Length: 379
Image 1 (cartoon, rainbow, N blue to C red):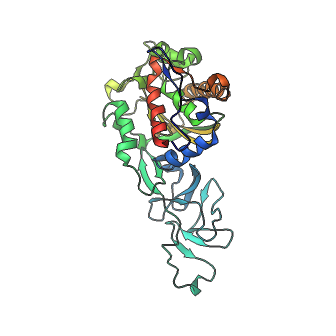
Image 2 (image 1 turned 45 degrees about the horizontal axis):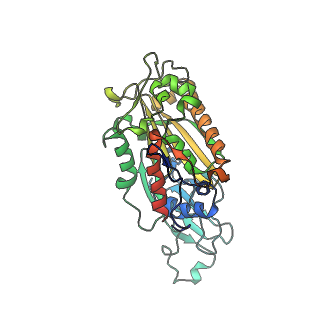
Image 3 (image 1 turned 60 degrees about the vertical axis):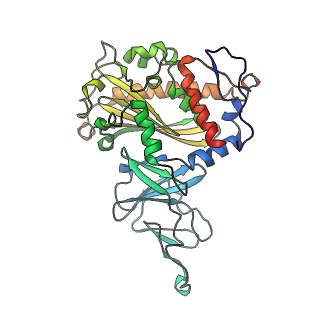
């Protein structure tokens, strides 16, 4: 591993328990830097909701690993992405988080100017430098894919197969490549977005999302709607399984009251069920019959993670002004409860009591596979 030998874990455990990563994996800047370089900068990263950059010139800047990336819609309607670094002297080209330009991005330092496709189109005295190739000295491009209505980026020179990584994570969890199709995620519309600044390492958040051993303790509203979660087994523990709504629950809402019209493509066997999917390294997708909750994580430091959570509904639901508050409130409370738990764990990661890690009970053993994945990627 770039940060040292394979991590030691708790030894001599009973067979029902499995060791976790040691505490330093959640606080060590060297380990975090290795994850930024070898995971977030080499894998597909879900960056932007495509409808957030609706027209030519609209852009967002996104932090992917150690790099700032500009994601912009071109004049041809296609999405382009490039490193937010001027090719002249390395100045940060764009400091705004989002916005729109008419035709180009101009460096505020020496006025090198780039088209929406990243090509160098102007610079002071460039006419006196006929040997400067405008394409070669354009912005460094980043690989782009659009899927499920989101823009995914990969900073690697040779990106991994999107189908064998991102799509495979979804298919393997749901048990079929067709299972997500009926939710029409790319056709849904943003109804609400809430951002959470979480004082915890990104892995704490992934681990929490993957298990439900904590659900009976900290999620009273969720276990009322999904009674099986009180038994401690997350939906992700089983391939293709969706947690069933309680018999007296009408909808996926904070009080179990009636939700909204079912998304037309959702199959009968998917109705009144909740599916949770982890897409490595930084996406959670939550599917229920009438909406989708989509989380994107942006690791900012070893001990801080920004989480953007989108609630997506049928366009007619959003456009009609229908009441979505009860459905938003359910997962908003779940998020707050989860992130409070992650922060409670984070403050103990430097304790000598956690120097060799903790343990996973059987219903959490699948988290060990995530730990193995992290270690393998950073070896």
